[in-house]
Image (cartoon, rainbow, N blue to C red; front, top):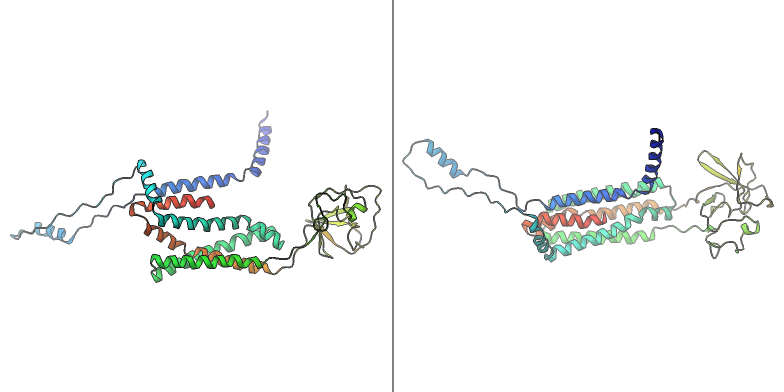
Length: 362
């Protein structure tokens, strides 16, 4: 095999793999989180104190340089405290001690509940906005990424400043956590009223069984269109605002592409027909040769779902950004609270366990 042929084969193989192996990024990111969590859990339990000269030691040093008959009984300085090294065999014992700390376990369980809710929301957020508001995918991606990130950064920053300024104690931090959780949950319930009315789709909502339309009393069967059952390739009649499940359902015979938009013509199952002459087009293959076409209409039919005119999208993005800000407000306080409720020598292990557990929902 020639080198050029080998290169072409490799490009074709890796090209297909890139499409189907996008999930490998999650595996790599998860392994990175696990490694970092292991490094954090291996931090020393107590840092060694820096040696500082005591005033009495300095005074004794000066007196030794100058001859004097005065003798001072200065105590010897204590050696800095050194914690015993933590080995791998201590990990099960320390982990058991951490899990017996019921306050830490309850705190971790509360974080898991919040992470579970946010993970489910983030997984279906783009799909929900796409179905509810019928906006372009670029706008959906922008609205689903930039406002939540900005809300999270602002919430963490404001929460840190608030806790530091008022010097909150652990009990007060718990009150802040409960208040922010209630406000964030209220925002989640509020957006349930910010949806849009569902636009009916011809070929789905007007038949009993979209997967068996051959026996339905619809226009495409009267015209012998021979349409496939539930072939979802929607087109939009801009004049009436109706969406058809496919061009065959609308009875369209010809189509042409102008720039990036595909137009359909001679659609006899549409209420109003196109009077203007169609540009050079190609004949759609699902028609029989014996079908008669009635020309003349006023509809402009393009590919895609008809856009919805719903003003709740901006309000939805604002409310969900406020919800993200509320959930991010007590994050720094949660970390401070974690360090207060565990033993000194278990702080690093608690941080590592929390990181590993929370990474399952990232």
